[in-house]
Length: 266
Image (cartoon, rainbow, N blue to C red; front, side):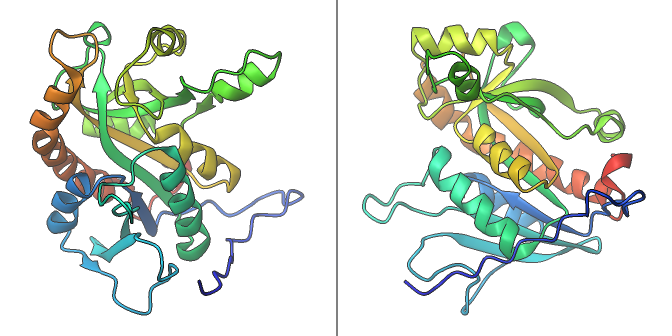
């Protein structure tokens, strides 16, 4: 594999008294599944990157780029598993992709767009699009003092009260795990996380964005009701296209709102 040059965005000097505000001009939208990404790619009229790629050739990662209302927009997807040909879901592929995209593309903002299970008890319904207010894990169980907190890994989302109000978006805490189903232990921790939605990648994206100090918005469309009476897999597969359509309708509105604004004004 050829070398991959890491060239992260310079961070402001901690001694700077009046750092310049970060203005949103370049956005990376990180999406896990191709079926979630393509309606948005088509809506924004983005073009798949051709050679030479910013990513190593051996990787299945994909990047679709273009402009929207003056913004530079990149949609990145981890692609298909090289052995099995299914979407590379879960926290490991998306965390690698997020890191590589940040150090290569220098975004002013990351948007993690995707689908999620929602809890009816928290007001979620099929097709709703939620903005995550907090990220946590529910399958990293480390019953050792302090490590237990590290395993949960709670992170606050970038505050965007003006955007949420202007676009009348729903909000809720997000809990992440590497399984589509939910064990009794998962359920207990998800409740402790006070989650409205659960997914398989959000907390991983948040971890990388937090390490590299890049603002993050996570937007999740509900495909299945976790505390409902239908099988999760059946609902997930049946509502994927509806959720993807909801994302492709909502995210362009978000892009138009954040365009040329400072992060602090969102």
